[in-house]
Length: 290
Image (cartoon, rainbow, N blue to C red):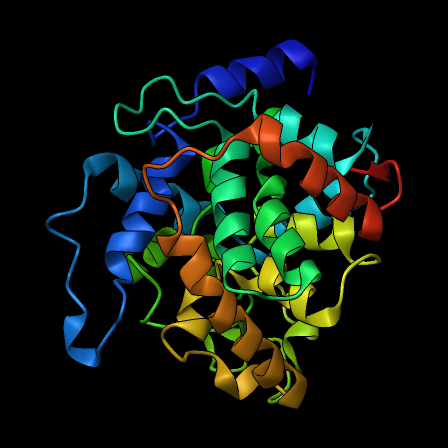
């Protein structure tokens, strides 16, 4: 996609007013602390734009679509950037239509990282908080919202009823492929999530961008932080192995910082920048492929 087309996609984000609208929905759907009795049916109350977002997501995230996007984007040939340059690049994805926040994308990332830092977690954990959403640069590469954010889920096997707006999957072409609609689908029981195709989005993309530089636990946080049917609803355990169960514990440790650390206080980017640039340099080379 040409630069003008990518810029047009960023200016016209689609069914959501901005990516924060999806994050607000997720935060409402998974309140903290979440008791079993706290689940509510959002079907009648959710904003129409969010419903339309999930309709498109569930309609188009097919096995062939996911395989095609991985083949395209995981060549990592879009551009060479440092982590900080990627943060500044993401900062150009401005949500002028959101009346509830004036924070930049960098400030949002720093809010998460600072909350993790305040609780005394390891430096790699703080870094994960800082970069976990950088895969959203896919929007600036021209990808539609429904192929960038959204609750992730496996394709190629039966859709769990615990996936939000499960009913929209009836319009997905894979719904009519019998092999894809059994419990295990194209996978073996206990095969491990490494063998499973998850719906395409910023989580999977960023995992592949940074997988050579961070500890296993941090990579799991990045790769699975939007896999709410698994780490919040307990779905798809039949496909997991022991390693996945270990990694999901770390995803659950990260999840509260992802959802609940975004307050009204604005981080001082200029003051914090030296600390985070030093932290980035500890784990990453000067530039990496995107």
